[in-house]
Image 1: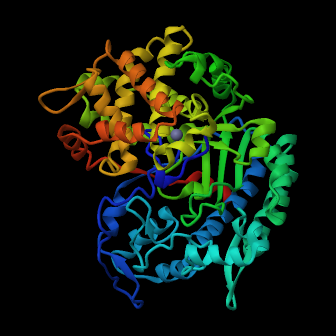
Image 2: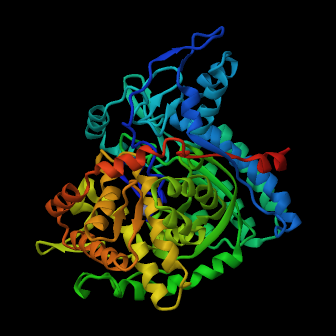
Image 3: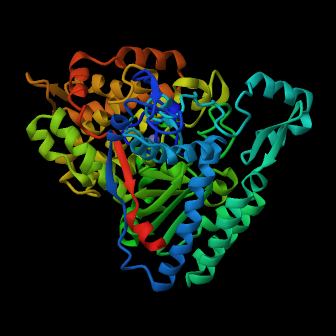
Length: 568
Ligand code: ZN
């Protein structure tokens, strides 16, 4: 439901920014010295690494934003910009010094290296297994949250000897530092006091400018949270936010902490709300109980006691910073993560419309043109892609979660262990399609989707399959190809182009969803391994089709000129 860990997921929609960290697709290039006064090593292929990203202007129409909120936006953007500084410190304490050396570097590699450093929020290539492209140092698994040389066994034995330290050490908002011969936990509010102080000042200024009460309340409470590290009340206020400007700013996801996954990374999304578009999607929330009942499994395995209804918001991004602006761009998120807030108010799903649009235009369409038959490629549509993103997200909340295994209560996540997220992401892809087809049949979604949905989905599969088909995390995507081929819902022509077979498609999707859901419902670890082994290996035609995507951008490099202009 939340964005899933980058190293452990493969989804066609990257709700979940799964791509970063999959890595292992190529070896790190031998770094060689850049020309200049400094001996800073810059990878020889830094230009090619940067060129994988399409530079796209990301901005929003402010016509509907009242004057007072536009004034507030200037302060909100200034606060958000601090989150690049904050996050880079979290990635590595050495980042400021390295950025300074890079700023002074000269020679043909210097400029692309600076751009890539900004894009990756540090010197490691997040879509190539964190290969260093500046400096040559490997990335510490614990990023900047722990001493660079700290091992798990040292951390664990410290806690065994000092049980009173546990709460602070495993807390989401502390950094672990060396203190003489020992270890010490430092709260974020102390460690990052200066940038947090500046951000809090700007949020308070914004709160004073806006006339929207829910926004003023959230901004003021969030400013307090920066300085107290207590985010509960402001998370509650964020759920109640109903304003022309939708702001998400704080420490949220814990994936940057590759050592334990304890520590939350700072990020900011500054967006403009699209209330009409959001209202149009609100009806799907009400259909969730029906969609659960409609799943192709026996009633005993359905999860018919679903909790709180959660709001869905459609927005256009004006600016992102920190964890939200590194490597692969997020297109949707589901927050907050605090279970107390989720129990009281549910969680909010936010869809980033202009980012989804840019990925569709710059990545999905060219992929379709290179992998699908001309007829199928012509049917790929933005509306279908957007609906698939939404229903992928909604599908994470449907199907088995808490289960009974050998007579004892358990969870799918616990039973499937390291294969859980591979299967769960694949499930969300397939269930999203199944649910859209069902809603089309009910007359609740446009009939035209029946023409556009299938090829758009397959193009999305290729988008995901480009990364890591040979590793565990790509297996969930490859399995969808092979299953659909086996069922005759996909065909490959003599030129190696893929085509969907409309009459076989709904049945094959239903069967695939049934098989995936039953592996989850029964907590079948061995069955999941067997399923991924049977369907998860890429075929020669698939590899050949992926080969043809070399010139298609891997992702976007967001150009936030409009936000920069507003801050001027
Ligand atoms: Zn997902």
